[in-house]
Amino acid sequence: MTATDTNTDTERTDASTAKTTDALSAEATEVADATTPDASADAAPDGGTTDASDAADPEAVAAGTPPSDTSGRQSPAVAATGPGTDTLLQTDGLTKRFGGFTAIDDVDFDVEAGELRCLIGPNGAGKSTLLKLITGRHDATSGAIYYDGADITDRRPHERVDLGIGMKFQVPSVFDELTAYENMRLSVQRTHADADLDEAIRDALERIDLAERATTPAGELSHGQQGRLEIGMAAALEPDLLLDEPVAGLSVEERNEVADLVTELNGDGIAFIVIEHDIDFVANIADEVTVLHGGEVFREGSIEAIRDDDEVRRIYLGGE
Ligand code: ADP
Ligand code: MG
Image (cartoon, rainbow, N blue to C red; front, side, top):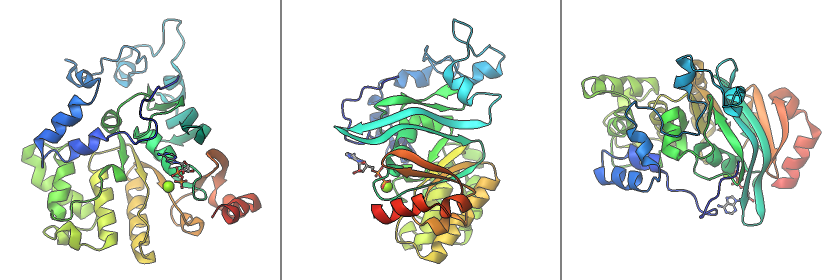
């Protein structure tokens, strides 16, 4: 499948971000929806999708509808990531070109439900680009992305959020002038009714160990606390998969705090793809590591095997 994209070199406006901030500006939601060509899909009477090409509708599968196309075969999305597989996400020949430059080159990458995967590789390897393809901030040049039984290659970013793909940097950053409580409310109100809101916000702050700082403006929190707030806000949208690119400049202690939170949320069943820049730090959180290099998957394996791999050492030394 080829996705054509008129603004290949620019990041797509992240409609989900606008939605997240809709408490601040109702107009933001309208603008976001107006710029979404298939916004009418949201208004399908059965609450499902109107995308007729979606043979892999998980609800149809759950309802016993055979997940097959007209020829009686399973769709590629169901075969790769549907019920009966352990795979939550799979990319198939995923490619992203910026002009003549190939940033992601024919990548087959998959993540199991509930796993915690670290993505490493030297500067320019394609790590950020791969995450942006998965969230829909970039359109694929070619190849496909399957998620939980559906082909999401052409889905808008906010649709992917609704399907359960969370992104930490999808919340642009916390709003400095709002308190931790008010920031968290922006996320929690998307999944909770008004009656439950206060308790749910307090629970969510408790979960990230920020209950004591509820009334503190986010701008006055430490970097580590801000990092936890961002992850907590993404987790409050109840994703099955969370993508995390930790901000640079955290102290070792702050990074350990964030790592503990990622590990804890992963223990609750959320799968993670985490970009890590420090290979030694990866050992603290992940078992399984994917090494990107030059836009391709260079190695995949246990942290022990990767750390002892001379070729991996070589690309790190040569690439920085
Ligand atoms: P990493 O996160 O591993 O450091 P990136 O995914 O940010 O790598 O970038 C991979 C390659 O793609 C780099 O060479 C980078 O310069 C290029 N690249 C990334 N984004 C763009 C863009 N929007 N336009 C043009 N080139 C880009
Ligand atoms: Mg990057």
